[in-house]
Image 1 (cartoon, rainbow, N blue to C red):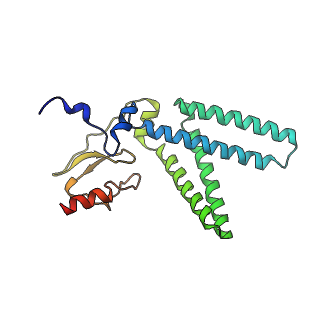
Image 2: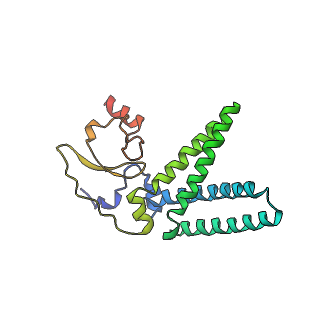
Image 3: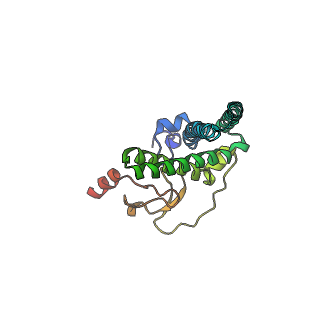
Length: 202
């Protein structure tokens, strides 16, 4: 075999271009969560303004200004992967998810199904971003620490593979994978329907 192919390996499920642009496979996840945090921070700021709007204008201005400063500081800290911002970020995203849920329920009651569907989709997306922070791989990547992966015993025909969505390490049987198989951590497909049908035809 010509040359060393070790530098051609990529994490399962990731585009090689995305992998080469990132220092580790969790960087794209962090960038996406940072964007979601920015949007949800704006939503939380709007909610703060709406709740305090019944008070005196001076109180509203002070409250909104302080909230904007704290949310901006937290977003910048999370973007730099500061340790103290790690759990504050999912808390803010969770508040936004609750807002999406209740607003979607209100719109469903009023019969506005299109916007209700969009808010439900945003709610599930936010919940997934919150759950990402409980994933040990993402936590170690954020804090720049080394994750110790236990030496899991493999049965005959099994091999280690990474989930293409959350990158959890799994023991799989490649010949038995089907499009209906899902990751036990993130519940996403381990094999795309297109890839599964291709090998079933072969």
